[in-house]
Length: 265
Image (cartoon, rainbow, N blue to C red; front, side):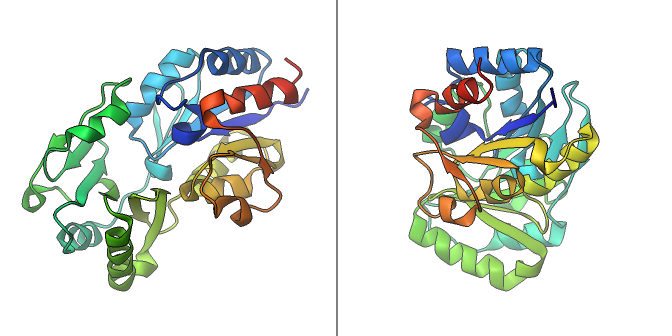
């Protein structure tokens, strides 16, 4: 049996509507690991946030975090880190934005936000991962994995255009949801991180099965030999990924059910 790498996005894909792992998902991934397959989680979430889900799976999974800015092995060793240039991070922090749009930066040490935003904590309720409030004038621009704006989609489109005009050639700009604009350094995305992980594991793209639901999953899904797009995915994602298969809804443990059928578990 050829070992495979099963890699999945978290929110909207592997996690349920409550942002938690289904029992069936845990069971299936443990069985696949037991058969010799590799597992990786790939998310826009911070590494410290993602570790909780890996610990719940209780298998040695690799973690691709912050949309590919960081890659950790199952023993928490940092394998790769790619940061936004400090001067570009400063430009993004300084961009004018409406008061209802939240500015966030993800650094290796944690998550910084411009003002309190308690409603954001519900997304991380199951992991306990929390932000630290840091005024924009005091935000450290060194070691920034991504700059994240959260808020009204129309306002985000304007910020996207401003970021593109300022440093577009040096940035990778994407969305994880319609109200979440995510900006990393050029060449940083889940697909590039996945490619390096496959090489490390001695596997090819044909040996990879990937699952995703939003635009920040595009490169990862396009690389994988078998790409599965969720029923609840962003409407544009399916058309962006060549040869993708549409599967069920994340709220119904569709990844686990598809894997159970695919591997005859």
